[in-house]
Image (cartoon, rainbow, N blue to C red; front, side, top):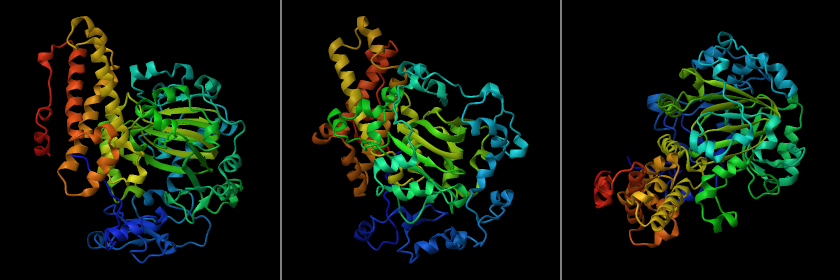
Length: 544
């Protein structure tokens, strides 16, 4: 299957130039069709932002005949109103309050964990959760299946290479020093605003709609809002995408040693670009959530893993294991016009709860589906990182983002460029090993050759190769110039300069992978298995 590239273009724009002219429009000036997931400029639909905010379910002109006209939120003069949540799940009720309907799912959890949440210290009591009262049948309440707490000193590169980071792990506050992480002392939201500058723009999410809040916000305005008592806030808002690398705040933070050791970008990205602070900006975030903030189920972009440190406040995570079945259900849910009306945990067999209190840290592995609820105002430092031990999952989820039409601006920045640099890194590493050992098939060096790469990295190289092959084939077999432009912008210079550089590199890389796998399996060179396109690239083009 070939990869495809999503280009964020409003289909009602008269021409490519019109779309380019409107490309500066903020995300608050777009609207998504709930039926086909296509985005449109409000301007092209002659909708004002104020009117758009009253729309509950929007159906575009192409979908009106099959899905009916758009529906609107019923206005209410009351600050809050009761909602029949069962009816909401059936899609029979429109939202008329500022608390997200699914926040009620966590009320019983708070009842059981009030002491630990409010005191800010982890509880050691086994918590019995009434699944019937929660109407949450998939919730796993068996204490024996609880994810492990771990000392940060045990979070090592060797541990990750052996285990593959299979489950979330919590690092309790008592073990914070073992993480090797550094933070400014007594950091507050006001302190964040002071360090970044009061006029610094910040994207704020309206929790009720799960869309960006309007009008645009600054850090100064956000700090003013955050410091208000809860009953004086007119709506529940959340900041979850403030990347702070290279800022006065970011410069005062050191990520956990484990994260630095496992960061694939640090491993494969050109050192001269890293030195210039020119790398994908996704490694360091400041999250600021008020009480009752809720982030619906999602997978972090590009299949990245996440580190998460709670400076103060409390968080409750709902985790769903990324099995093939669950990922398929997740994809269907993402594409469903009823996504906002369905609590995703109700569609799976099992989910798990993790409580975080002030000072706790968390590692979320690649691919885990999760939602997050905030029972207390909270300040968090976290970040996303690709790893060399999760290559298959990261590639799989990048493809899922393409299939579910996630706009490019909401994907991991420069993901394809990272993958190309990774392939070049491994190719150079294998070449260096071959030069030093003269010949992979030499029995005297076979054991050493096995360890050119840890087994989890080696097993992921085929996924890496096939993903890049899809990109090259897509660019070579389409008349859509955006495919070619995207490929060229992602290629390392050394590959781009050569004639038929991408094809020749992939043919070489495929041979290197096969050679390395053969040596690791103690097979002879005569038994090396190569894809048919390695000798004739036109075969790959014909197979598209």
